[in-house]
Length: 102
Picture 1 (tube, rainbow, N blue to C red):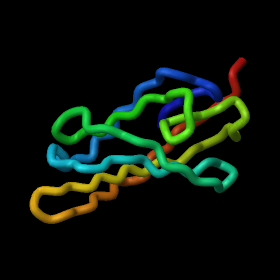
Picture 2 (cartoon, helix red, strand yellow; picture 1 turned 180 degrees about the horizontal axis):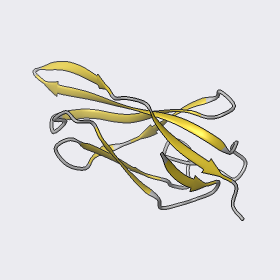
Picture 3 (tube, one colour; picture 1 turned 90 degrees about the vertical axis):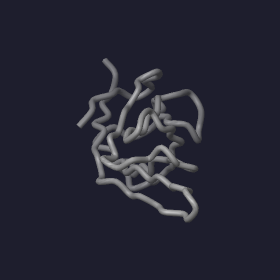
Picture 4 (cartoon, one colour; picture 1 turned 30 degrees about the horizontal axis):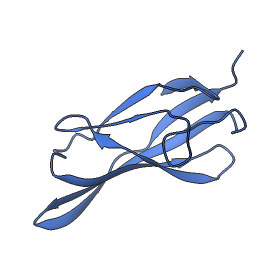
């Protein structure tokens, strides 16, 4: 579990996929907010098995605005590998605990 606050910018996340993803052609994180709404955040490979994404300031990137619901957000990594044939890896869900700033 990772603690962040509504409106945070620049927080970097690293998700270990426990699989070799060096031939990834696409990487993203599916997000489900506490209110049930969903989104997709772009991710990139960090090393041989790890994805990374950083909270930014625009939709489509990892973004948690001050008007989003606080609570536990559920994320799940997806990686498409393209070494001759396409393989899609789906990781275990993880929690991002989002609180209200002081």
